[in-house]
Image 1 (cartoon, rainbow, N blue to C red):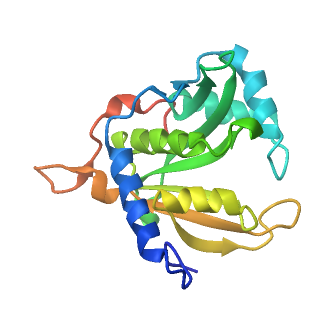
Image 2 (cartoon, helix red, strand yellow; image 1 turned 180 degrees about the vertical axis):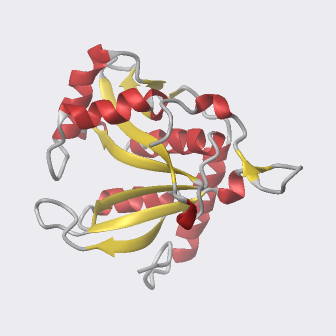
Length: 218
């Protein structure tokens, strides 16, 4: 069930669409490793795993095993991005975990970025940390040559839906009883093809930087 990026009859709809376009433009710009006292860095080593699993586990609709975390993080460490509060004690306050896979030929055979997990500590929310984490991994996906980015989120998770729609994602379809608790999910999708550099020899889109792809494709 495809839906409009922003729906409803709100008088602020035009302003919201403008905000989305500005956010997309911001994603394409070089992004700083530190913003307003928050620093961003990729996964470093196994010592960070307990903080990551503890933070994400508090917000999950269903539990993940340590093997799920390791599948994502060790397979695509550059797509596991961490946020640290440099104004406090330097603690980890946010994390986003993603991967890249390749669609089969029947579905186009293109690279697809997948956002598996995103969370920010309760006392650090409403500071734009979640959006900044997402922008940085989306940029990495573009640099790796991904034609799209996708994720699933609970229909009831209004905050997550607002965050991703502000970054240009649209609701691709509704998946009934997707979660173990019986909750439905929206699959959200962001088309990245307009941001890929064309190959002058073939006319097809190619990554602007292939060095960021790690862990292979499943």
